[in-house]
Image 1 (cartoon, rainbow, N blue to C red):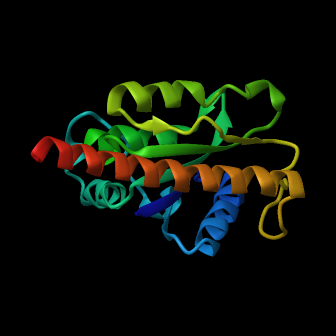
Image 2: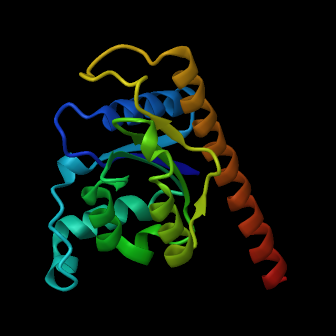
Length: 188
């Protein structure tokens, strides 16, 4: 089982990247096979519905996804939605990368009013790519440092990150086992 923690912010002092880094550290501490992916480093082209799909950076991004069974996607919230970079990544990599994955969300926002802002993305991932979305997500605003770069999360936030990490591990492992049993049942 391979897990992926993806930071979708392009901001140099990203608060959602801070969340992602703590989730990554937590998952590494469990002994799981976990990878880090940062859209800031990926420098993906904008999705134009045509030529962008042939860009080698898009192929590399899709390959990262294909190697993951479960994904924690960390994004800032802008205008009551995940950021455009996250949506661009999903558009570029589509079903070939996202199909059937277990996905959890880590969202960093400016205030409490955007609490449900991850639902349009969750809806899209569930309906378009048949992803299994974790029912628990981390939404943080006041408990994330304004200038990340160090420090541990407050105990409540650390607990929420740990719960999300455990849900990702449990759901991903159980779904893989279920799919294997079904494959064996259908072939035997």
